[in-house]
Image 1: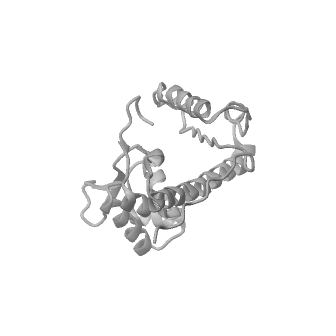
Image 2: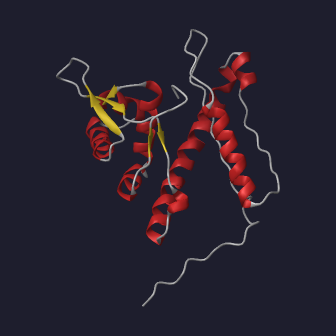
Image 3: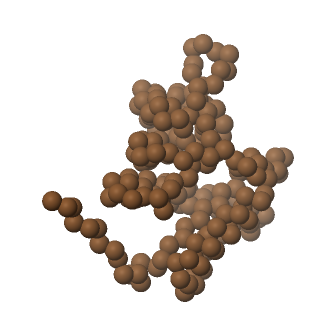
Length: 197
């Protein structure tokens, strides 16, 4: 995150569908954190061929997630993220299709976040003490109504948004992954309504 007012994209159904692919989500995240890259660089980073990476970049560009950037070399196309954050409007989903597409995106996002925390834990033994001490993999469970849960999540988001990047020799991108959900098995499920004839 670069400032208190990051640029945000709220994709429609087609954009959310396009982003519901793990490779595309990984590419977009990489561009947001590391900055512009070529398809070749990204292919090497993610173990893909450059043709597949170019296809994913075109899909991301078609839906406005990435843009081409001029880096002065006509032989290579450079890409950068068009926005710093992606938000969904899950609360606005009315149709079953909208709910399904949003849930599919969240499934992919959760899988990518799980990969991130696993990689961070693999690297943890190699970190200096200051970074080890600053990191956590914790959970706190409180019994609250849904409205209060939403309020707590909003306050956490507001707290994180109140900080700016502090570039420097001793700085590094530091990820805050927030997973907030009812403990599985404790909320009565809402069954989908049968289609009307």
